Image (cartoon, rainbow, N blue to C red; front, side, top):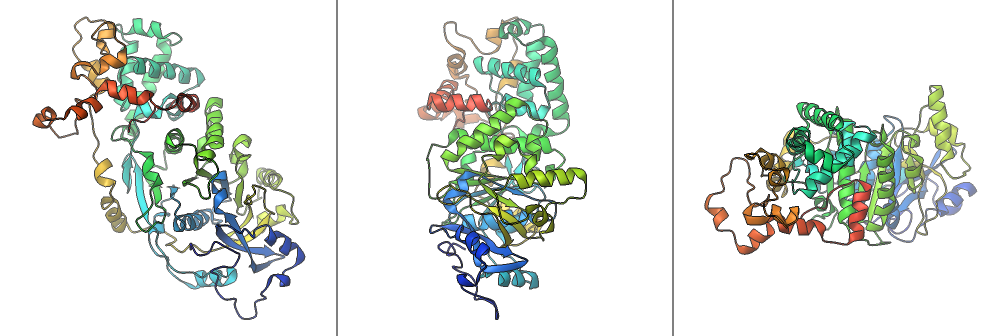
Length: 557
């Protein structure tokens, strides 16, 4: 695929007998549209222009590689080919060395790792759009939230996840969300690291106990009743089996930026089919991945190719019942992450599923067919038409008449201007259009370089263990680890070998002699003081942006 990137038609199959060739044979309107997609630089090939009911393979519809970090939208009714469009774009990005992240909600994107199977439909589509089709598999890494499903486990610590994202998962109202933020602030100030749900529950329980009520008053603005609501929400959430998603080892989002040994971009496929019944959780976890990337990546400005393209499937779930603060944070993240070389594509049924503030930042659009069976459908159709630039097409009629694997396209040119609206017959993906077999998928997962790193959960000393220690009438400062007066909580957390990491251990493994033989460097790096310092390093601006967006904690890598 990577050789098809210079001019329209490069790498295309020879035209079928009787097919008109040469640009002059195209109708005038089609020529004008085709001229808008004749990019001189590297580009992805989407398909061939549709005009007046005919497919015109000499008019290739493409998107500049350098514009993929300007974000995009893939929309359309169920069954119109959105998933195959994701696969087509992901393949070509990988072929040109760009890593890709795919959220696989239905469980049918794992086939991207295997060569596609040629059949009559594939041959027919390839001939129609002048595609030189070759079955090809692409380098893929398979992930699964909390290890539920077929994939390397993806976990986050509660501290890293932050109060804003967690509030959405717990369905807290605005007052409760602000109160949860105060709980996080208290835990941070006392050096109580929140690794998993039991840690946060322990801190909230302590603050609502007779022993902790004085601390609750010192926070200000957090009532005992609200803290009780948060505690009940956490308990119910954990009772539903949600605890597996939080803990350590925490997934390092830098893993998503890797390339394969042959130079192709790695396609990271997060399987979500096993957690489809928890849409609020998985959609918020996707936002955590994106927010974490935003926090860690340096500014790169305009680049010739993105560092990563992130496909956010079932995007409407992210925005459903979201607070204003949450929506503002999403808007700012999407606006700012472009300059860090990350492109984000939202995948949903209609553009109205995406708030206007976010939709206005999505420069690349692939709109599959829409249905207009009800008054609400017709209203959504008219609203969708208004989001496109003026065009010679009757878009209301066109969008209801598109077939599977056809779409209306407009992208940003290399100069950043919108291209003409183009009805397009899309190319066929070259990888397997369906899921891998379970055995093959399991072999790919266990053979991954990430499996050994993330497969085994780790339960080290954190807030829960600290608050379970015998207290014998000690005051709150002593309970939370402030054992030496005159020092701040972060310093004291790491004092005297009491840092949260120095006593950590994997489940089922003892510490023994290995702990005693730690080098001085290992002891320093593992200390609470060092981790507190690491959490504070970096530019103050970057830290403030992260806290102002989602309250996510700085990663400790």
